[in-house]
Length: 304
Image 1 (cartoon, rainbow, N blue to C red):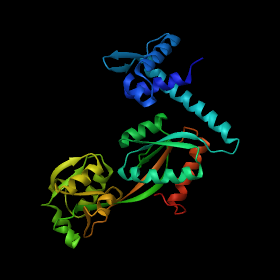
Image 2 (cartoon, one colour):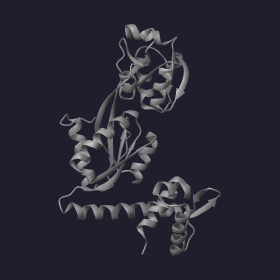
Image 3 (cartoon, helix red, strand yellow):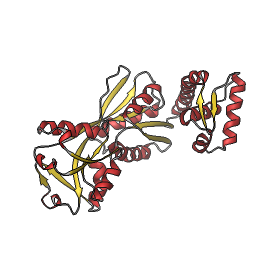
Image 4 (cartoon, one colour):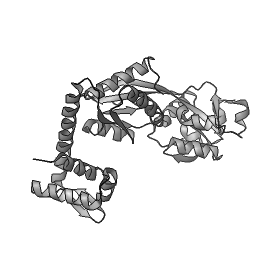
């Protein structure tokens, strides 16, 4: 009989490609992880990893086992949570994938409120790229996902999560901070910091500029960063101005280090969506959280 704990160790090693990193994540020593994998390989009679120095790579057999092990662990968790729910309790653990900075700011508050109602639940938030969130949702690695873009897929079901503003911020000492309003053409000569091409805020900004007859390649781009918080800090340091999520800018604005500036005729917003995989049966906890998000979106609860 396969040991579920051993399969959990196997999946953690497969995800991180390292015995030592898996041990750190699971609070185990590296020898303990290595011994567990060796025992699993002996039991199955096949090699699961190729050892390459400090890293490991899945063999063909290991790749086959990943999806089966993940499904087995998910089903075991579902059995346990279902049995406990028969006593009227909402319990369990799940992971949510998030690809947006605004999602990172919204989810902790929402999860905190959910846990006040259901204190025996544990929810992990995995911040990664939009493509990675989709892949992990479809493979069953995460139960729910938050994205700023609707990606059409038969297996995915969406609900609106939050409407996010993308705003222009400048350093507190910037000349625009006094008037707090500019025209779109004023952006052309100003040093500007952008997110990477695939970021949702970059797409929203591009569409907004085009409506004002401004091509993104007309901007004086001095830096591209893949993190909204890092962009906010770069603006604070006077490197340039930037368009970022209002939620990501909130800290700097409250501290007086950033100032929001309105761009005449340019209103940038984007919808955030929560998605789930139709093919993955939801536990009672996941159903309750999905409905909790729906109530928050309808205004019956605050998401923050």
